[in-house]
Length: 113
Image (cartoon, rainbow, N blue to C red; front, side, top):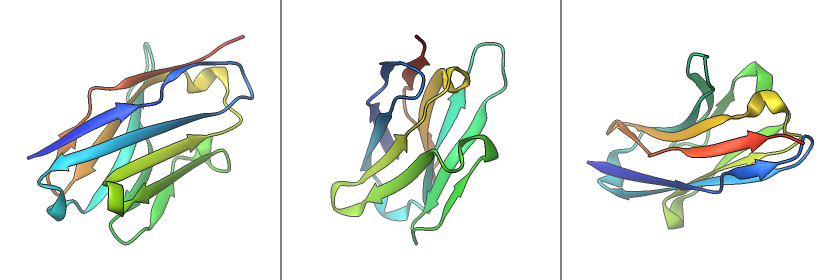
């Protein structure tokens, strides 16, 4: 079993930046990939970004060029650097893993002036 704990959400103005972090613990040695989903009110959940154990990354089109996913293997942590944030990025962001399938509790990101 894998436990995921997110941090780093908050309120930011349009054009600003935030960095989300997700620390994995437990049975982390079998994790194949990690990523971030987001859930906005009234919308379906969306897979925002993923990173494999080999470092390959994938982004949904709406965040390409603005968001960067990275991992620090020594600290069992995945980061999501979000730049040039827009109001439509407002959502609860959830960290997730594949291999052992697990979800974090979510962290709120609000982009508003």
